[in-house]
Image (cartoon, rainbow, N blue to C red; front, side):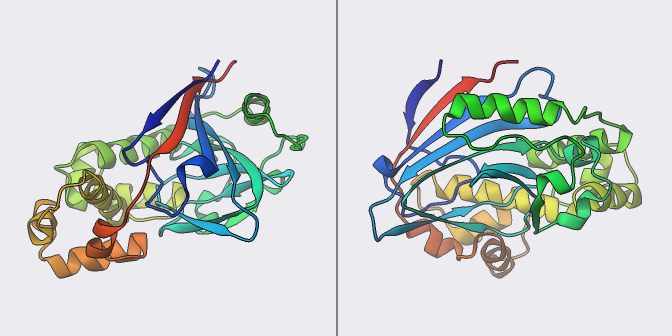
Length: 276
C-alpha cells in the first residue's frame, strides 16, 4: 500500500513550475527485483487543473530513456539534452518507467542513440505484443508496465552495463570535471568512453559531466540560500560565470539568476514498491 508524504524540496527531475499543490499527485514505485537492473523507478502523475487554465512543468534532462503511458498508448522518449516543457490542463493521468542508462540496448533496441531528443511509439521499437493501456489506477498501471517490459526479456551486455556505470560515476563523483576524469573513473580510454556514450545514449561524455554539474547547481539554488553565482560557477569547475550561465540556460531554459528567484510550493508525493 502506498504511503503518501509531503516534500518541500525539489522533486528530482522536475524544475520549478506553476503547478499548484492541490492540482497534482505524483507517486513513485520501486521496480521489481527482476526489472531493477533496467528500470530506475516507475511513476504515476494525476492532475486536475481548473477549466480554461493550464500549467507548464519543465522537466530536467537526464541521460536515460523513458517509457510513458498516456492517452491509451505507450511512447518511448529518448535521452533529452534540454529541459522539456509538459503542458497540463483539465483532468488526466500519465504513467511511466524511467529506464536506466543503457536499458534501451538491453531491451533489444538496436540504435538507441537514434531517438535522442525524439519520441516514438514503443510497439514500433519493442518486439512484445501491445498492451491494453486504457488505465486509470496507478497500481494496476505499475503491474502492466512491469509485465510489458518483462515480456521483452531484457538482458544487459558489456556495453549497456558499462553505460549505466559511466552515468553513475558522472552523477555520483562531484570531483569529475573533465572527460579524462570520467574515463579514469570507469577504467576506459577516452575514445572507448566516447564510443559507448554515443552508441547507448546519443550524448558525449562532456555533456554528461555538464548535465550533472548543472543538477548540482540546481540543488544548491533550491536550498533557499542566495549563493554567489561566480563562486558557484568556479566551484563547479567553470572558468567563469558567463560559461556557467550559458550552460545553465541551455539545459534549463532560464538563467541562474532568474531561476533563483522563482517560487515553488510543495508537491504531494507518495512512494511504494511495485509487486513482482
